[in-house]
Length: 389
Length: 163
Picture 1 (tube, rainbow over the protein chains, first blue to last red):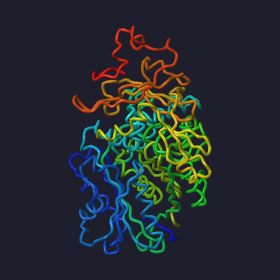
Picture 2 (picture 1 turned 45 degrees about the horizontal axis):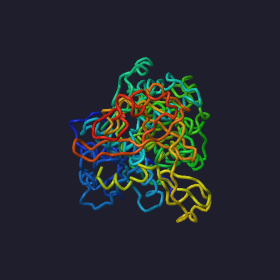
Picture 3 (picture 1 turned 135 degrees about the vertical axis):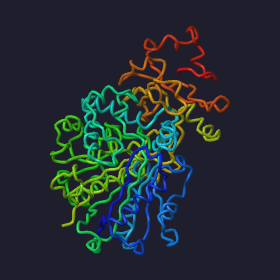
Picture 4 (picture 1 turned 180 degrees about the horizontal axis):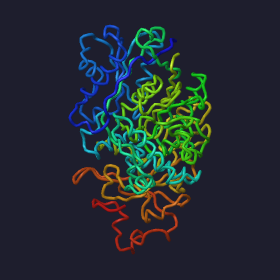
């Protein structure tokens, strides 16, 4: 297996991109990444594209060749593969791209993630995205994705004393970070009171505990580490790429307050990278719901089980903290175009590790972690990246 | 959802038909073809037998849903819970016949046969289980049985009701 580096990154603005089509945002992110990597398209080996639900959302399947073609590469007959894993589709595509380069089969690949959620009404988009949960045994009985996460929240509050205010802090933090990200869906700041007083979605979660439905695309170029210096002075090495799965339905988990897939994926990733959680300076984690962020911090190993609420409140995950979380604004503020999320997380980490994150820059960031979750944790993908010196 | 897709789940959704591993005794709902708990995972193939849950259980978590799942729009706000059964499996279901605000972790409940949702005015009506309090004193007067003012709520019917 070869060492794999990220050589280029690209990303569209996230949000309600009503004036732009699926293929337009796909092209924009992909071309940005190719230009950033100074890669000639003759050298490109293939495309891996993360997407959750294009068929249901825009009546278009078979989107990997569609994006390849739209990018002007259709006549080169490159392999193009779509990867689906619910909300973790983007990071799962990245894992496939990583395997392709590490194996030596391809030298350079583009990994993209794209989703167009606002071409359908909000209720339709919510119905479609809830299919990342178990349709037959959860959704049919009245569950939605936020409702399932609310069940996790309620039990977490019951078992560990997590408070409504501790949940709300996650959203306040996300918007604080998002206010500095020109690509973010939301750039407004929030107060604790605004989050806690927002209309209920599934109690105890309110409107502002939940990430928005967004359009957006992101892309990275991967290549072998030994060729990286031809493309960039600041290659970022992927030191771990790990996937773990769990039962589809929340009700089949041994403990509903523990994301076992995250625990296992993180353990494997830290083993692969020969690192420990306290080595990480920047992390992009799954804050699709305020509760999912707290549970993730625990299950990634940053804090003890049950302690994320109080620890988050101390500011240790904010600017100046030991591990700064979701400098992009996270899913909550940067936005949540499902299939693009996992790739965008890595785009942000690469910017941080290169020292190109401008206002959001975490000084001395050398090691970053990204965690992308599908459904209520049936899939977790964890990547660890290091600046190559 | 197509007719066949709902119809074929009838034994499970109507009668809580699960399965039991004859190797280790673990009970599953919905039924599994192979036992995840058995160390001899593969040996449990064809050793799973049908097993019907009693339907009783205890709420281990709940939420009050305001942004409904498709087909449940007329029922908001509704309580949705996870119910741990004495046999082992945990069910996801709506908790009904009780004011949503009074649902709590630890509430003793039982599953009951109800209408879940319908596919528009002329489509198929989906039935399955909902969850109701075991202690009748907690049950809303409107759901207490034949003497109650709105008995139709207890029976599956074509009209949209809050349960």
